[in-house]
Length: 249
Image (tube, rainbow, N blue to C red; front, side, top):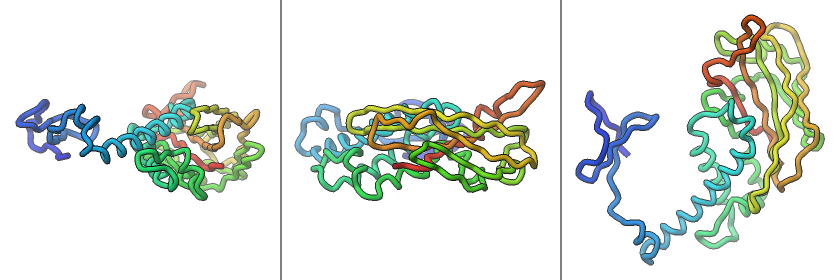
């Protein structure tokens, strides 16, 4: 993939080169000469078909996870979250050491010791990393389904964007079965604090821990608002909000 430079940008196809516009700018790539039917049936493309099948499984697993946490991610994700999540799922798929080539999958990969650590720490918004916003330790009780931040002083412990007057903490637990596609998510309460020097304990909890799947993901979200005349307004279309998988069991 090449990047177009110069004042004049081309769109369309010229001499088997596709010119197109993306969020990353104006790009160009060679048009493939291999038709779909050959890729599907030609024995020479067996490896390609196997790779495509495994990629499809990773993409499907990523979509399942994103759909399950959509109520949280709607206000705290970047435009590349889909591709980043698919890449993450491909890493987990690669841990599958029992399935044959072309049938390696995320569900089996997650059964490998340590695989859940690949999910832990995933940031849904690369433009607002929770690890770069919150500088106060938090605790997660995976049995009770609680998130706790003790002695939080927003003005000291949170990096806030210009114009923000309040910070809001919330979270949720997503229970997912990557083999069957079953999923459920339960959100926590929300705690909104003014950005000042007052110390508060932030306690987030769910009514009950979901049990739809064999993997439980614990997510923590931080949102920023500006208060004006008693109303809360988001800042720059949620660009400063963070969402992270802080625990996976």
